[in-house]
Length: 166
Image (cartoon, rainbow, N blue to C red; front, side, top):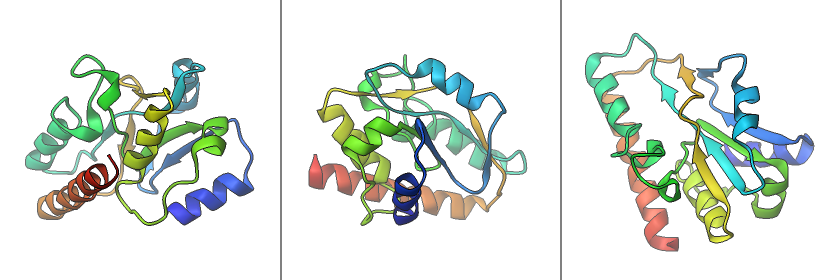
């Protein structure tokens, strides 16, 4: 996945790159809203990703927790400082100038790519911000068991990357 993102950023010049997963959709004004969040200090933006309505109540409860101040991917302004927000791989906006300076995405990681990228941005004094008013929606459903296993894998890789490099 990261090889493809790096290749796309290299081949397609743009002002900003919005990386989302193939099972997401976004409101028509997402990019306009994202522009309002961009400042010269912005390194990257992320936001809430909402599960499909067909997911069961347990998955919804876990997702709410993960997107709250308790979960590393969804720490929003107000729950903690902006310094701890780590966007998920399914919703990551990076200005082109920032990507050129701090990219490419590490290709040896699947889930912790944004963790590593956000770490590099913060070390350089840039902000990684949570756009609480700019969600995307997942379309693909899964079982609760697979949803939990996936989030455990994501957490393990992110913690491992933070411990190894942090």
